[in-house]
Length: 370
Image 1: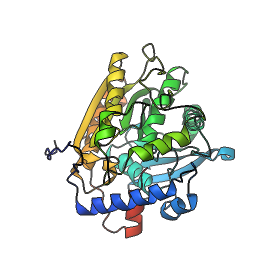
Image 2: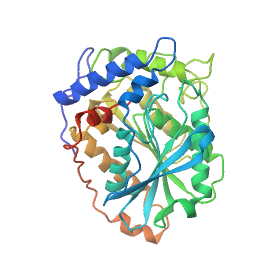
Image 3: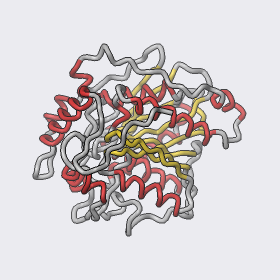
Image 4: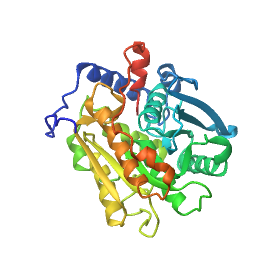
């Protein structure tokens, strides 16, 4: 367990973060705020200038490759295969960015997925989906589900031989965790031919509603990366025209929520941060899953902000990888597959990322998460 750091939850309190993290958060917040225009459009030139795009590359530990699914809508996936011959679980990962920014090729998410592939270890598939406001809901959900179907139908030709179809997981952070939930619901209503989805890893999920939660009213000001004005802008850019934040795409546990009580919904791990205006909505999601009769586990980090797990300086970042690995192991233990025993006996201790040689611009972009 990581040592418990001081908790600060009063209005205008700030998390105790390293100065380098505070500096990056301030810079990213300024860029994102300026890229989100009042008329609901995005300054793509500003975002693209800072959003360094990584090509698929192979290293001694992880190889990656891009696979096109539908070029007409820029639907593609990036496949990460660790140098590991054991039978491995598969993570279908949806990136964050407020539904409006970034891609699997963004340096931030490329490094996150490489980290997961190496340290869980797992086969990781990162999905590129269309962005708002140019493409509103349900475009992103359609893209996510179509990518899932493509993987399911082309398993033998797309994935490496050591990918275990009996141990597949949805995963996502922020807006990507929102998409992971909706794709999971749709998958439960559709019979997959090859894949067995047994878990959902929901990191800092981006949910909301018309009501202002206590955390949204309490956690205001600079230094938190996410703000109510920013999340309002993202919902206005993403949701169908004429909708409000109680739309089922945003308020998944609200008055228009889907009834999942009769679905074989996967076990879910929900990660919540103490200094995130969205945390009350994340807890409501966890409680709604339990009320719906679904297995759910809540992981709370009290002194961190939105996107904390992308900051290697924070001890909670590496600890989260351990928590994810334990969750995968627990879900995998229920699978009747003798080939999985080697994976279950591995030590739950991730290797540390070494970012010291990254240029400062790349390091800045690494933390650019909407």
